[in-house]
Length: 229
Image (cartoon, rainbow, N blue to C red; front, side):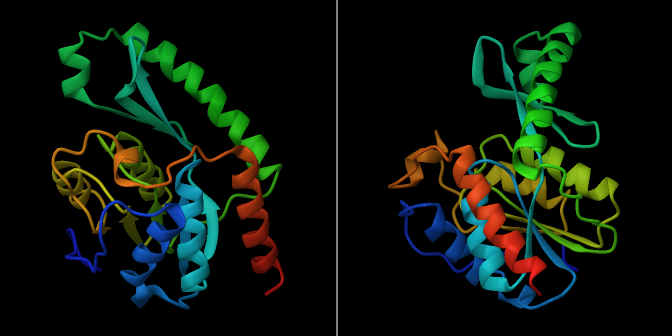
């Protein structure tokens, strides 16, 4: 187990697409190949195509970590926090203070996003049991991070389930976000930390929105492979 942010093998920006991002991350995660205790958890929706490539390359299980950003009501792209399955909530205190967000507003947004978490649970999993994470090495994957609120919520949720090791793997994120996560996870793999970041999509050639149908297709393919073992 190690702490901190790795100096990773990196290609060039912009990344062609999410599959290419997954391949790059897989190259930086080679030591986890064929380990039975490794499970790759994607943050949907955009993290799923990235994670599917990683799981396939490593011969690892693929599943989801359901999280939702808590966007400011007047600026939904700016995260004032995030929630994750298991009742996890994290807040970006600086954003909350700067915009004078009330507890009532946070609760209202969190309630709305909790309903979306429940919808995605039903839509994506359709009753499939959640994987047991206790004692496992969990690789959390997204297609990029800005504030890192959703990933911090994901790390907290996995830590709550007593995983043995938590690895955060993302292709692109601000250096400050990577440093923050390095204190929470056991390892952070992030090949690119451009400054200023602006928007994650800026660092991809193809950054089309991932649909529910794409998520379902990738999950069913991975689960069928796992169930056949």
